[in-house]
Length: 194
Length: 207
Image (cartoon, rainbow over all chains, first blue to last red; front, side, top):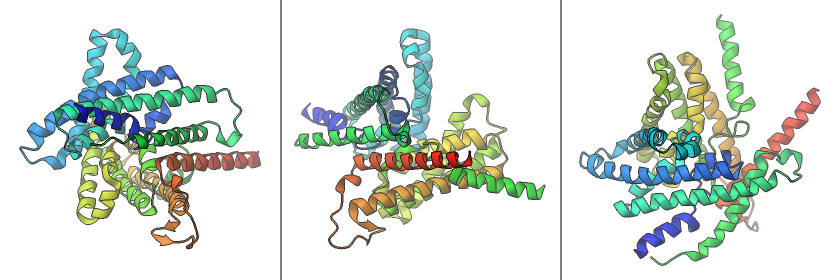
């Protein structure tokens, strides 16, 4: 239990997936203009990451490892993620239309979110067991959600400020992200004993 | 006809490397750009691996473009790209174990690099194989160039070296923050601001 807590605090705060490890920077910088869209994207990522962690772990353990096909990991995992995203999209559209209208447009983008593929590969590299993998996937997603929500809040404020011309648009967002990243470095002190 | 082709190849190269530089102008592929540029060696290694994948995937997607059904094209592109990425991964693992260790997970993550998918969708799916391969080469060089510039700045300021050779002398105390994750965002932010500044100056002059 304690072990799981350590893994999840690690993924959310100490080694935040976006701000410290740089997985999933594209959507982090791309869809963080408004808090609403950021929340939608973040939720979609949490959802997909948790499911993808579970599925890829099972696939790796029961198909790739027994047949010694580990070198196919990258191809197999990305195919699983792409299919999973497609299935989630269809399922939500049919049965939970309200959630679909909130997350719908972000779902296809998630296939190419490197955080999702990253977390599934990390689960295997770190030799996590099934439960830890799922918890790690979920917490990494929450880490992404926290980071993108914070950045979107900052960007909503930035929109009203007077910024030097060359810094308008993307550069100021990057610099805001840098400051966020610095503040997350403060969590290094939290490092829990394993 | 031959002459016309030559001109357009030059145009493709210029577009990919300068006027539509994937990193500085189009702002694609940010994850590897920020993550691996702590040293010049890493930056160049990442750039060249991505270039190889870009050329191969663009060429093959272009060859297969008439056979791939429109509805599942993105999935098919990703599988083609993933195939080449696995090849690169194995090659680097076998011959450059040190690079493989320092790039880590970012080699398999080339699969989801938006530059590659963007070139496949925007260029290779509409053009014949040879120009597509050239387009892949151009974007690859542009990406490598951008990574080299960013990593040179970060390695010089954060460590005082370039490619491991000490440039700044003994008394230089490195600004560690530049190598840390925050420095990646910071350096890229300032570089893009510089590019925007130069672009606005050039536009002002042409008027």
